[in-house]
Amino acid sequence: MARTTLLTVIQKIALGYLLTACFGLVATIYALSSLGSQTTQSNELINGDYRALMLATTLRQDLMALDRLEKAEDIITDASLDSVHLRRREDFLAHWQEIKVLPLNQSLPQQMYEAGENYVENLKKKLLNTNKTAGDIDRTLAPQRTKLLKQFDLFMKSREEIINGRLADLTSGSTRAYRITLVLTLFGIGLGVPVALSVIITIHRSTRDLINATNRISKGDYDYRIDTHRNDEFGELARAFVSMGSQLQELEKIRLDANPLTHLPGNMAIDHEVSHRIESNIPFAHSYIDIDNFKSFNDRYGYQEGDKAIALVRDILKETLSKIGSSGHLLGHIGGDDYVVLTSPEIAEELAQRVISAFDEQTPLLYSIEDREAGFVSGKDRRDNDVQHPLMTLSISIVTTDSLSQPSPAAISRECAKIKHHLKKLPGSNYLIDRREQR
Image (cartoon, rainbow, N blue to C red; front, side):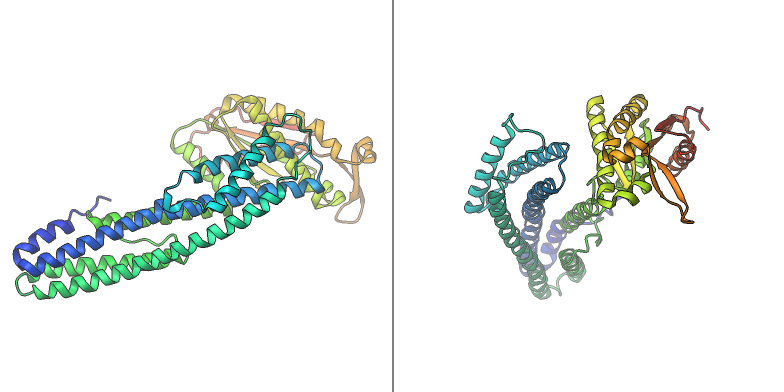
């Protein structure tokens, strides 16, 4: 929708000056000054304080993730966690560099900066230590990390107080600007009633909307919308508020959508990426990976071992994608024992072959020697009859957009389900690519 072309505040001020003379000019200068100050404060709030808070939140999450990984390896001995630990350390270092270059008024306190630099220096030394063995997670950084976490908590608390204070100042400033402008304008109302009323109505409506937007966003209502179609300074300020709300909402969606076990994108992110590639006419292969006989394994060994099996598939998929050298792929976890990988059609078959080979090689190690040698897991069916469940295998259903005349997320999901139903009837691990012509 095109923005409505209206007189800008400056143009109204110029016209009002001709009609209202002295008092009109005074009211105009004050309104413009207040509006410019509010716009500057809003931009600083969005690009400065909110950015500092988001970076601090991300860094704290990185530290908490490192702490959780360290505790996890006290319980689970798994060399594959080293790569996750290394990536988390590298993420922290990258985010630390970002927060160091913030403007002076958003920069870190001296004590926090020194604690962070000390931690980073020791962290880099650990990254350069090539003698580290599998599963050997250094714990000497734990006290420094604990100290730094406390510093981040203090920084985030103080930054939130600053943000809330600035939001309150912006609200009171908007209200004060409206009231003073109204009083000054009334002195010249007899000389320019139409222009005076126009300015008053514009300021009143805009400041009211901005006050409401400030209060709603500060309470977490990031989807609140105000009029952004004005071609003036109030429109610019409104668009800045909408942009801020959208960015905060997107961060919240990403946080809520990620799978808590694997930290991979969930259904929302997958569907969004599938739709984006279809709308952009980007050919891709949709690989649906499902673990067969997972329930029998989970029932026999418990949910913690079941989580290990799910994490194993995640690690195999990540490692395989890395070895193939695929770029622009998406690895997602839609829940339970089901994964989705979006890649270019050319590498889909090689990916399936390598994943199945690695899975069939590593999965038996999750079973006891007795079950491994027997080749099955004993259990009960719903009627309490003795049954023998095979060891876990993989079924990989692959659908490419080239095989569909009108690809859509629903159509791709439907075709993958059909292929998976067929594959589950076959013994062992299998994959199948839909090579039929467009239909």
